[in-house]
Length: 32
Image (cartoon, rainbow, N blue to C red; front, side):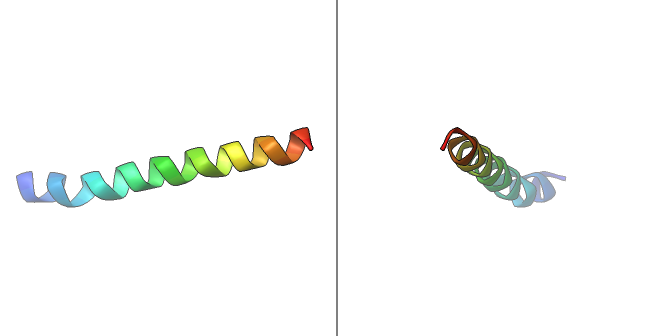
């Protein structure tokens, strides 16, 4: 269970950051 949590946490954080970057880039494109 602990190994599974350690394995999934970096993927979860990187996916959240990627979604945030994608959202910000889409927002900037809509403003332009």
